[in-house]
Length: 53
Image 1: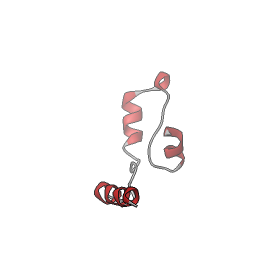
Image 2: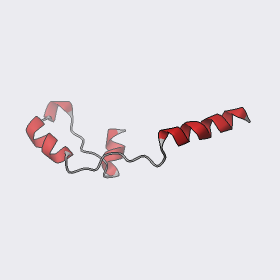
Image 3: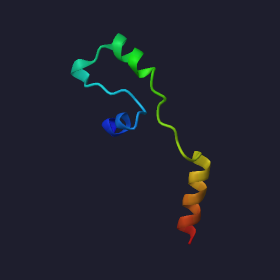
C-alpha cells in the first residue's frame, strides 16, 4: 500500500532499516498526503442507502 501511494506521489516511503528520521521527515514534508474523494459522512450515507435496497 505504501509503495502504491508513493507511486501516485502521495507520500514518502522508506524501509525501517534505512530510516534516517531527520532526512526522511524532511522528505515526507514535500508530499501532499492522501486526499479523499468523498467526505466520510457522504460515504456512510451512500453505504447505508446501498444496504437498505
